[in-house]
Image (tube, rainbow, N blue to C red; front, side, top):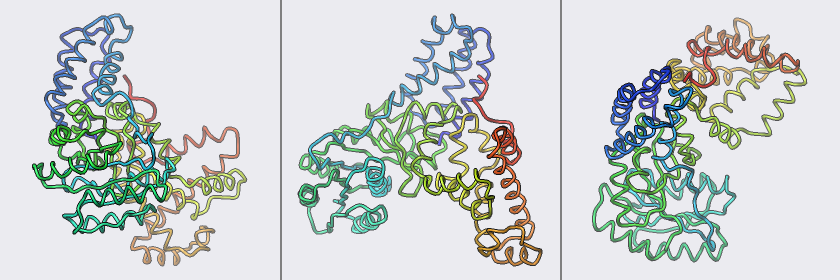
Length: 460
């Protein structure tokens, strides 16, 4: 997300950061470029106008002219105004009510409502330790009811049955009663969607809302629709008292216009981003972190949080003990580390969150690198357990067999073994006091071409 916008803005702001003094003239040129970058990212025109005016007002004032490094202050202002447009701080779900806390999902058909119900229920169960019940009131699409039942089973939350011949209000009221009796903390209600906003749909959802009186009414919208996402959210907000927005499919949205428009147009906070198809691909929306990511400064906090939730701590501790005791680093360990990285969304997802790595991720053709990593796993899986634990026994004939079994070439097997050997050498250095510096140098040497010189914040 934001790939195009990040590229344009970092190039534009780099030219102004070197200025010893900022004048209205050179600010004007930069702001013109920023305006174009935002419009190309499909940010709504009223949002762009308000944003540019705010930045200009602050930039030509005392705040910049008295600074020793006006260029850096200008970037700081752009960053702060981006945060303001998107909502200042993360808006958490309001679950402080007599259980069950009812969360109602609204939105158009195809926006990803049902999948978002599953993602949100998993988030609440795993991160907030809540007992969650889900129910579908989409009586027009029996397939949606079956889909939610399947997804509920996948994420390990209870599904309340419903059918196409029932009234949506009756379904919701029965589910609330069941949630009370069985002491559920949260009930998530999936509602019917349409291909467009229509009166019948709006009247039904108003009736449903009046009956269940949810503590949260979340509007689910596809970020790929750009400005339309904000306009649709506004139309729903005029009928329903929305409390927040979930932006879906942000992993496929290179522009990011919806994220910058929704809050300004609706006045409602974005609470979550859907960042992939898997049921764990839901991130709380932090405007400050997203602004930092847009300006190419990375998002290390989200990366750390992701690592905490997705890395198997038991396996990581076991591996750390093994390495520090100098017991070697075999191909089983190598595969395990690759899989842990894949659990965190793969190389592309991780690089995007590191400072200064936004464009580097593209330059290194991260998609190609991802393919190479998957190939490594396939090659290791084609080996016998003995070969994985003792890579030195892999002779020419064994390499041919492994290549044949994994659908690769012998040179691919050789490349994997060479990379493993380099990694094993680096792991040995963990034990020594000077090891970390050497390890860092070794890691730099192993990075794909074009990625070795990065790290740290981009020069401002």
